Length: 173
Image (cartoon, rainbow, N blue to C red; front, side):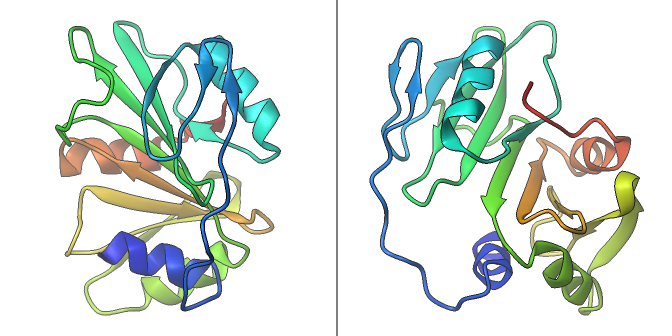
């Protein structure tokens, strides 16, 4: 619920726009909103070029596969799946990077960082990382002049924070 509130707040509106049709192609087929698909690095690069906005991740990791999910509102999630885990697994124990359109992401996180119980840290390129007690395994990143909110979700609090503060975050390339 906290993430949804942050995303809604960062988008600058209190209501959610009606879903738009989502048809983005990977070389292996079409994406259906809300359904994860297996994706290689090359497919992620193609996907980003086709959606017209940045998609963030922490780069390729040896021994991991990726699943990609796009929502009806064009938010994206890249999950890092250890060997043997099926695409679409319902487990939440995987590192996941979310990219959300949010014209006011940086200002929203600055405001949120002043809220009771929230912690913030400066990150590379003048960005800010913020997390709170309700969902400590989710760290939100925003950068000046970037109209996107990035979420780092980790299987543990330590992992989520280490990734978010590491400087590993990059656009898929």
